[in-house]
Image (tube, rainbow, N blue to C red):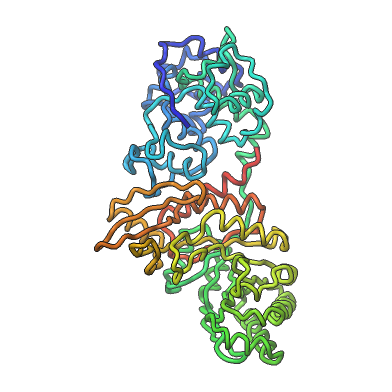
Length: 536
């Protein structure tokens, strides 16, 4: 969105009328910390928002009511209104904001959710004043009202001055009654908006009962599953404490030989999880051994032995469920795998345990022919879509681990045959560092965690570029004469996929793997969860 900076007329009495003085008065019990608001028409609004920690002064004792608000300040106000947390993400394409800036985390939070963009691909212009039409666009977007202005005729005398990109948002603000014209009937779209005007505008949002109720509503208690991989039990437990995860999936059981299952249970982790109100759905794997998996599944005796062994582990250790992760299975095992899931579910339901089955995205290949998605959706409690490996480690074509179009197609296909309330989407907490041949093909790739990815970016002074089609930043660097390419997974890309999942109203999310995240990941996903849950 283009930022237009207009010199503000001093005092701007007309601006005081534009947002009018209709907001409800704040309690007289709130004492004012500000020395300069006694004559402001927005005094009560300023104090109400100050009390809620949504709007603060330009100093401890000065509010500066007629001062123009900057883009950084307005984004911060919107974030606080929405209950978002600042995000210390190290990945940004903007050259004019830095982690040391007070507004950095607030801007990152809003950008990650698509609430605001830059004035160009590489600049945000945080100190530029925000115009009235810009404020209309950002508030309309933040409150999910972008379609409300469609077909509305503007009544302002200066409507011809409103930029094309802002017309529908100004119309939405007019329809909802949040922004009005001055006493001469002008909207003055390109004038900077004053801090006292913002106070009235934001407080008016809070006086819309349905919106206020949404902002106070608690988030849904959806599944948040995290797999253990490459961590000791103690490391895994510490990572879980710092995460959003409420369902643990330690990799404890693996198919070894006909009907036999290795037992890696750590009972103390089950006790700890239950103490802190977390579930344990232990993972059962086949180590991608196609031949051994076929031998077990194709024999009723071996299959039943496997089922009885797994059920006994659930009972013995007090597990809440099992997560079946059989990969690289032969297409000929399609029916027997479904039978295995059907019979195992019956056994687990008899002891009140949950059954989850992991599937890959259906791209019509031998890799996924074994999955009868519709049948599995009927038999399992949950079908977990592994929304990654769009490009895998041995791929000769470098590319994303999980672009937004790939995840959307995978979800759309699964939703055709499995109810949304039975679906869990797994997101990647890893990435790949691709080494490129001179002809543009991939020579190799290395799996990296998000923390390792961020260190690569810092060490090589990489400037990521946002790709809105893929829903990801892309980047490249050269080391020892070899070009490397990255399709980044970080707060912004993960939030886009998270929002997609919540818009489909699925049962929850999963993460491969715990320990792969960076320090900012969970903050970004908490914001995504909160914002996607709003229905204004």
